[in-house]
Length: 348
Image 1 (cartoon, helix red, strand yellow):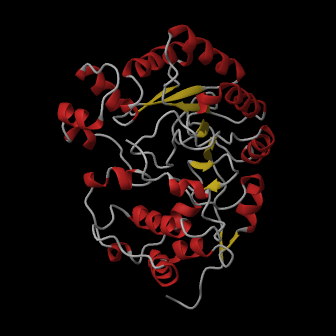
Image 2 (cartoon, rainbow, N blue to C red):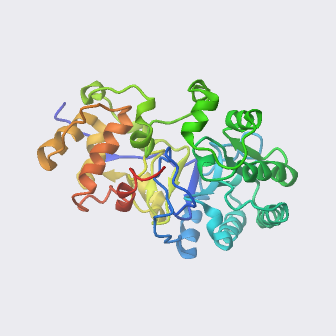
Image 3 (cartoon, rainbow, N blue to C red):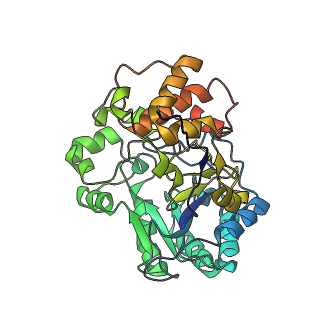
């Protein structure tokens, strides 16, 4: 490593983002990269913080290529969690605030646990549309259907298309179609899904090897020793401006790097313009230069031991080290929220 070390990290201004209303969820999916769960304290984002964050984001969020009234998974702004429909009143207020700020391509994500009756779903979708919501993202995969009956998901897709037309994102549609063909009713355990569909069904979809998936689904991936990832920098992930997140504690989370905070999103412009001092955020500094530095630091200072079975990805190695450190100390302000690290190995 050169003696000339990066002193500051300059994240790109966000062009697409998601805001967590809370990490609290109705379920506890095995693949959840943000370790959301019903076990979390709700700690809903305050309206004051929401207003400040939306004001910051309104300067840079870009619309879908199809226009500001259309949605796309990596465009515009979405409200998420956790499960945002656990606090429907707050969700409506959040949509209205964003719409008043003319933030484009607004949508909300849901696992559809609440979609028990047609009238309820239609009324809520129409209320959100009247508040300024452009579309909806419906989560469909073998992990959601472990705790949400497929009929509720199917109802949300059908009525969502009535209300929002083409602005319904079924994520992931391959599973939605597969469940229809398999005739899935009610909930379905993942092991039973594999028996019915085979492992090949998973190969058709996107399953990111990060977050809780590293611990609960690690057997699905090939594993590598830590040294396999040495020499790799995370600077692109840390500075990218698309599909970033802000949580209910106002942490500005880069990309899919759950449990890693770049600072207070209420000061987003200063984070991007003035940069992040890596002397004050050493974990970020190690990751920006070489993940090997984080590994060696964790072994030296916190007694970290490499996993014998290896790691499924660079993200897994990073996450496992951060988890080891965060469970011992709260001295690193970039390891937030700390509670995230306590929920990684829970789930089905």
